[in-house]
Image 1 (cartoon, rainbow, N blue to C red):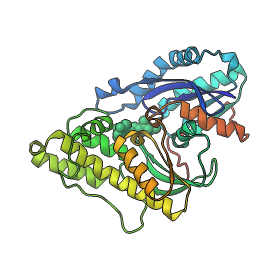
Image 2: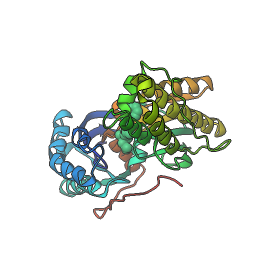
Image 3: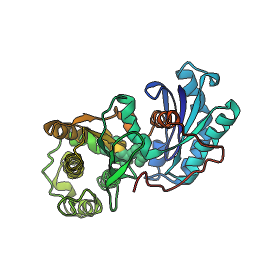
Image 4: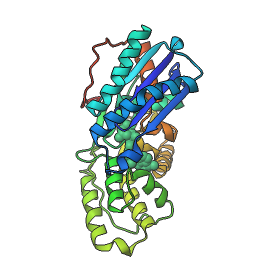
Length: 332
Ligand code: KG4
Ligand code: ZN
């Protein structure tokens, strides 16, 4: 089954063509990062207009790169929730038009579910039960999955997402937007214990997160001692404070639920330190560990096509009145 996936929930216009939920024929990503760097963050109306400008060209390019034509596409999958309303509407409108014109099924996909499914692109034989840490610019959650499509929320952030903690700290370090990847790069040369920063553990056994205290601590510390430490030490110390808590709680969730596999997903899962620490911690406790390749951690449409494949093969499909939804939890 050849699925075209569309992703326009935030600041990437992406279209991908994936065979049988695993073979990526194309995964075209048009990033708006340069545009949003001008304002230091995503302005929703600017994002929507840019998606309108880009979407047709990105669809065409995805067909060209996949050496395929519309007539060979079997279904359309589109991120329809959660996300920026205007941005989502661009992808969903294009997806409906394609589904109607080509007379093929349409499936709306939850963006967070798709982040998790990026792992199944890398390895379709991942073993259940599993826990997956989803850490992105807008979300930080730990899910338990016992089978495909079955999610139990084990922990979530009570305030900022991990990606926000990276991006807001990077802004305080004057590293520009989005800063997660800059912190990752510079931290490699830094000392992670150079600057003392808080870890919010929220009580023994809690699987929830809180990153707003870290943000305030970085604000206060940079205000008084920014010049006392090299930028690399700031980056390594901030990264360590975020990664330590993410790894600790993900592993606790895995142990508590006696799972076979530990997964990570979302933009922050592209962080090299998080990847190596999670890999090490999982191996030490005997869990299998998987993580999508970096380009599949951040927003992309291959993950949408992959999640769409599992829905369509389970018999799900949407009608042409498919809605966009700004906020919807994947699981309670
Ligand atoms: O999943 P994503 O592309 O978009 C959302 O759905 O939010 O995640 C974007 C987030 C941003 O906060 C970005 O700074 C962070 O992921 N990010 C990273 C890295 N690459 C992207 N954070 C830390 N290290 C990275 N290498
Ligand atoms: Zn995302």
